Amino acid sequence: MNRLLLVVWCAAAFQCDASGADTPKVIRHVTVYSQAGRYGGWPANHGVWSWGNEIVVGFSAAYYQWIGPDRHPYDRSKPEEPYLARSVDGGETWGIEPTPSLVPPEGMYTAAGPGGKASELIEAIDFLQPGFCMTFRMTDA
Image 1 (cartoon, rainbow, N blue to C red):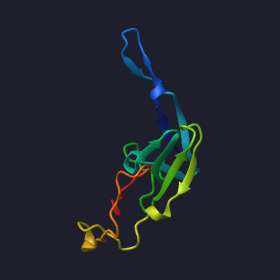
Image 2: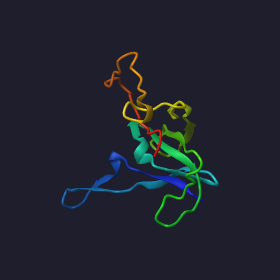
Image 3: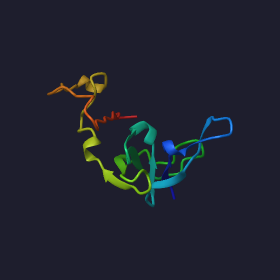
Image 4: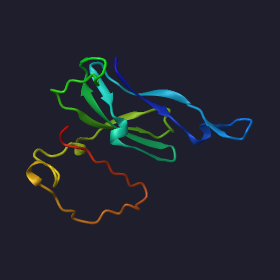
């Protein structure tokens, strides 16, 4: 069974050794997503955000298919689905939230992509807004 595992780090996980140097310590591994027949992956590509005890991690859920030891084991003929994993207790427990709004609309491409279709902002983005987070995803590999 394939599982999306995240190593949860915490500022309190740093301990000083005899020389006074900080040495990072892994607190523990936590299974965030596990579903039979599915492959969860690429959290580094989707983003990780944290505010206090809240952590949000984006990832893709794909259909599992073994294709060799040097490849990600997922079925490329089926679509990946974007999800967000959210913890509000510092990574102890996780909930999975489907994010259909992260799936690009049919035929939507960036200005540099096929079709050259781009959309204009209706209002400015406040990047300094507390709690702001943003993710960018591609429409095709």
